[in-house]
Length: 104
Image (cartoon, rainbow, N blue to C red; front, side):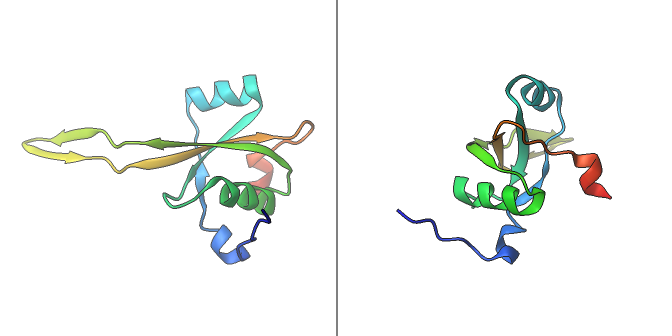
């Protein structure tokens, strides 16, 4: 099945930002993966194309995780945090994303 490449403008909206947490750092060091917060309607091929377009790296594979929002209370008001979607991106050997260099 041939992949249909979305236009670059729609791919820019797929990645919402990197996930900076203790778990994401451990995964990055141990498995050479990068974790991104992605749009709720994004799929694996969208994430792969977006990472390759934005960071000029080659992606090996992508795993997607849907995270349900936690119920929270604000005083007497009950609410829920938003549901989120994370993508664990495996880069091909020798590839690296340096967020400090990308910011400049």
